[in-house]
Structure formats: C-alpha cells, structure tokens
Image 1 (cartoon, chains in turn orange, green):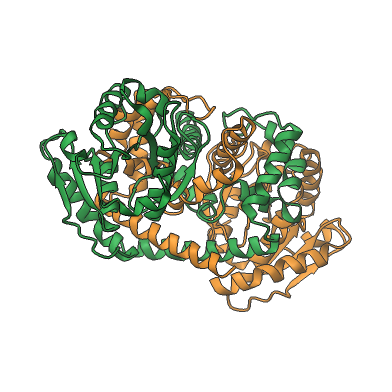
Image 2 (cartoon, chains in turn blue, yellow):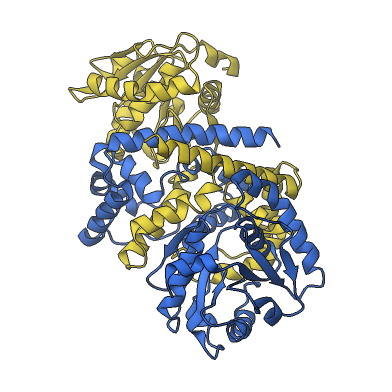
Length: 317
Length: 317
C-alpha cells in the first residue's frame, strides 16, 4: 500500500458524534472529503451539525480545500453502514475499554480491503483494544488533540497485531491532510503528549488539594509564563535555551542537582551519563543545527507574536 | 508604603549578570529606569551590554517607555555600590543556597529605607535564604521566567520574616512595570509554574531514559499539540473546555477514573468531593463567567493566531 494511495481516499467514516468525533468530521470536511457518520445517540445528526457549524468559520479562516462542503456529511443508522464505502475509519467513541473492544471488532470486520480503522483513544494501547477483533491487522491508534480541527498533532501507533502497512497508511493519510504526525515505535499508555499534559494536571490537582495554589493562579502561571514558549519550543528545546551558550549540556551538568529538589511530586529519574548524552543529542536534533543566537531570536519573535495574537483573540471576545 | 510610591522608583540595582540578571536589566531599562549592576565576573559589563543589545530590538518592538535608554546602565565594583541610591534591588545570582544567604544578607544591609530586595531564585523559599540577614523584613522572592524581558509572569512570595509591606511593594512595582504578578499565600519549593514545568520535564526525562520517546518527539508533541492552547487557556481552563457544555464538573465526574490510569509517573491525588468542588469553582473563576461557546470561540481564534504567529516567526529565521 503506497503512500500516494491516500490521496484516493475521498470518504471517511466518523464513528462517534462527541466533541472529538465531531471535530474530526469538521476537519475531514474542510479537507474536501465526504463523511459518513454514526453514533447511537438519537440526536447524533443534530449534534454533528452543530459541531461542524461551530468549527467552520475557523476552518474557513485557515483555508478550505477545493470542494470542501460542510454539508457533505451523512449520518447512517449503523456503524457498518457508515463504514461501507469509506476509505478510512476514525473511531471516537467514549473512553471505555470494553466498548472500544467490541466496537473496533465490528469496524474491522466491516471495513473494506486496505481500509485502516483508527481509534482516537486518548490513552489505551491498541494491543489492549484489539483483543476482540477477528483480524486486528488494520487497527491503529490515531490520537488527535482537542479540537481536532485546529491542533495539528496526531500520535500514531499500532498494537502487537497491527500490520506495518496500516500504521504507515494512517500516518501518510493524516500527513496528506496537513496533520503533524508522530509515529511511535512502541505502545505507552497515554502516548507522549497526554503523559506530559497529565503530569502537569496531576501536579496542579495536588497543589489545589493542598491549598498551595488556586486553579486561577495555576492557569495564569502557565498562560503568562512558560505557556508562551511552548508553541514555539517544546520542553527539551526550552531547557536547551535555558543553558545559555552551553545549551542542554551545560543545563544538565550545572542544574542536574536541582533535579533532586522537591519540585513537583514526580520523582526525578537518575541522571545517568547515558540519559544526559541522549538529552544533549536530542536537543541538537530539535535545534536542527541552528546556533543558539538564532534560536533565541526565533523564540523572542515568536513570544512577542504569540502575546499579540492571544491579546487580539481575547479582545475580540 | 503605598502602591503609588513605586512610580517614584527610578533606579534598580541588578545583582548578577547572567541570562536572568541581564534580562531583568534589559527590561528595567526598557521601562525607562536606570540600572546599577554588579557581578563578580571580570567581564560583567560586557556581558550585560551583549544581553541588553540582544534584547533591545524585541523590547523596541513591544514598545519602550518614554526616555528608555539602553545605555542607562552602569556596572559598579561592589554589590553595595550597586545598591546605593537604588530604589529596588533584583538579585539574580547563581542557584546556590549558601551564596544566596550571604549575598541577600549583604544586600539587605546595604539597601536604604523602604527598599525591597527581591530574589530571582527559581526554587528556594525565602525562609531558607533569609537566615543570614540581620533584618530579613525586606527580602522577597520575585521569580521571573526566561527571558525576563518578554515573559510577563513574576511570582511574588515572602518568607516567614518578610514584612507585608515588602511583598506588597514588590508586587506593586512589578505590576507598575507591566508584569503579570502572582502573589502566593504560602511558600512552596519551585513556586507554581516551575513545579508544573518540572513535572513535564521529569516525565520527559523518564520517557527518554526508558527509550519510549525521543526529545524531538517530546518537543513536537507539545509545540504541535497542547502547547498551542497553553498561551490562551491554562491547564485548568483547558480541561474545563474538554468537559464540553458540562465543563470542569462533567470532566471530573466523567473522566475521574482515568486519573487512575498509568499516565506519567506522577501519582494522582485522591479526587475527593472537596477537591472536585474546588476545581469546579476555580474553573468558574478562570472562565470569568463567560459561557462555554465564548471560551471555545476565544480558544479557536487564539490557536489560529498563535499558529500563524509561530509560523511567521520561524519563517523569518
């Protein structure tokens, strides 16, 4: 199954009409695809209509594909009906393992040859979800971020029974649609971004529970603090810059001991020389060979622009 | 000491000529203040010059105060010399507890009546740093984020011996200069934002150490994922939106069990009804009474603008 084949996919089945399923539907429609939807809720068609309508101005602002039609969505009476004739299946059912197991088995059985069934699960490994499927080879995790019509990231990872063609095809399809795809080598509960996000969330809950900070202080500490850097440089590159001219190597060699400080309830890993070297090499990859001064200038330009962008967006509220 | 008095502060002593101390100096200069600096390094004046020069285009772009002069900085031979005649003292020495203790004692002794000595420490509680000072009443933590000339957040918190006038005056001064100030009620190692940031960082180090993700994947999972939401909505308001129309209450009642899932190495706190109610009330404060549809529209506008802002800033690299 070659990558180029994904351009032939013209219809996607969206299973689930919640915030994520509806957001996916809006995104697929904006890329000029047709959507065949299903959800057991009696008002599923209305819900999807509302989600697509709410998202369409943003999608129009970002730029629609030729032929994009917010009306090109049909809600079918059964999941199998939605899958019939679809070139890709995106499952966004509630986060319930037993439900996912039986639903994914049904979707895998209904899908045509070469059709990938991707799950939007925010945390279950596919190896745990695929157990009821007669043929789990086409089952892949394709985990988006809310809202799926705006946030580019999609984490793609298969289970032990997933065929390589299926993960490759899912990644190629999402990339073809303009998504930023991370293909993970191995399964990990919560994948990557949700583990990081959940670490923040748990520390925040601990602080509120202990009376150390209010939710409002926590929110502002991010929006007016490190949150302004994260759209441009992730946590590793951020600490690379924190090391000054010496970058990540200086940061780890100099501030390594502060890893032992009682910040957060998350225990620090042992900073072995191997981990240190992996982090330094990783920062070089993230930096793309650019000198520190360029990275700093990029960050400064971006933070200013982000501050203005957010202020303008708030002002229009 | 009334808040209005802070407008009379025309000169700030900047102790330490590293990335943080130099960044503070650049910011104070951009607000039209004069800076008296000190650092034991023989090339301190040159370092400060380079940092101020590098920051000045960004500060000019953001808008300088009347009379702002990048040359209004003088490097003095001793810390006491720098403090003499200054209306506010910002200490940004290396993160070494013994060094901070003796330096803060010296600065407190040298400062004139009503002058606050604020420490940029990224994690030490003032009660631990103030132990050598004859009069610790004016010693306050004023923790900025890198770069201090661009990131608005400053966390302000006193130690057990700090006088209320000192924390109030520090907060008023930073606000007068345009900073986003969080006044903490109690001391907490790492304060708020660094605890949250460090939780992410530790989880990232664990993932790299375990071979689960590369630093580049970790960075992209943030920049192309949740990092795009964090400049506009912090972690609590983000999860409020994730709850759909039911907001934080629905999110906690529905997804509470997934707190038990093995995402991140950070143990989840017990989701007591009290914590649940505190989070729901806090989300209402953060939301400022705005209906969910307004919050979603604000997020969407902001995420689009942030994506464009970052893309433009990168394109100019």
